[in-house]
Image (cartoon, rainbow, N blue to C red; front, side, top):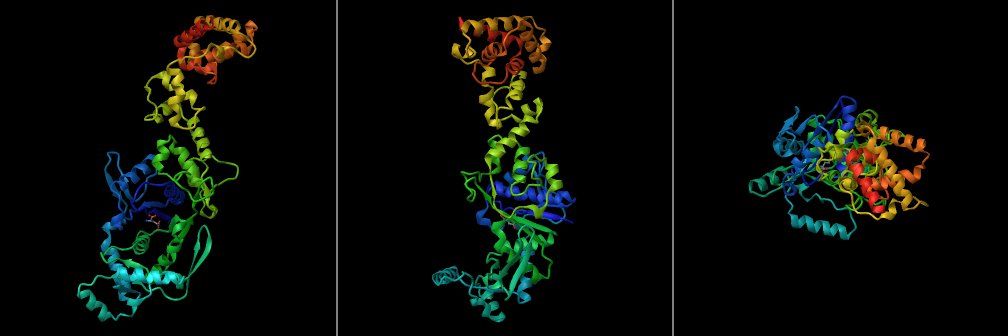
Length: 485
Ligand code: GLU
């Protein structure tokens, strides 16, 4: 049974890298009917940010990703925990970690350490000066059980460290293949702090085991902590999960992602007017592309096609132009009603108004993001003043433009109202009239389009007519004829 987990520390917003890990976790679990868990790693009390958990859950909800176990945001805004291995907040599981740390001490695989912060600082400084790897020098390993107990009884605070054995630790990363660490490079890391809170290594390893996690997917910055997890598993006699370290995200400058090159919270992407479908497609294919000749994938397709062994081990470049392109694709796929719904919060005009809805529908092929709509639909809401010269087609003159507009005005005045029901009907009626009357497309359609939009560049005249409706269209054509006088 595949069971994956996202284990965020609630220390801020959900960044794009974490979102990608969450998607890969989700794809992997869902494709085999497994489970995707959300576990809140909140043992570092000093780094907690109030509201971070709510924020995280809101993002999951906005993206349509529901964990099978862990805290879930309900419709009414309350948070409930679902699943059978909870609690999924590490701060509520402190006894479990203490118990496990104690077990290792009893087995002689971990030991108490009484070194002060000052001593450890000096030790590190000395090691750095000698260009040595900074790691604990095992001063307290020589304490006898009685000595350690006496110091504890005397009220001296201590941490628990693991005793890293000699030898080497190898694991097969599902993305990178075999990775070996010489244990001499691995620190006797702290697993339990003096305040009784576990460190990441102990808490995550114990939870991954007790929650039956089959695959640990996480960013490549965690590779160096993997030998510690593996050594802990060995000490407890557990089978380790499969580890897969997802490559870094890089900016278009091929450097580690920065705020300038896209390392922003997922919320920012929403605020910039990207649709969830585009974000999932874009982020879910960063460093993983199921097919060389396809870019657009629905979440269902990604779930079906996801393959850990095909995740690229090289850093994935964030190409914002591609995201814009994908967003345009998903904007085009929306119906007029869906578009009006998605535009909420981005468009200041009344979204229940049919003119506004039609303007959005026409302009969706000409914008990249929801935030572009306010500007794009403005010419439909109010005709802006323009220079009469822009109404004139190439080598024609004002009289020619005026004459053509007059003829179209007559046609549209007499035309059946139903023709304004679709862009196609309008196009067919006008083109048929142009042919019948022996007129030229350019001389007719250019002034018509400018008269309707008030702009040199705009959607087709047929689309603008459809958006404006008969009455407003006639008014704008009459206005253009007057401007040409
Ligand atoms: N709490 C760690 C983080 O904040 C989790 C790392 C892991 O997935 O093991 O990213």
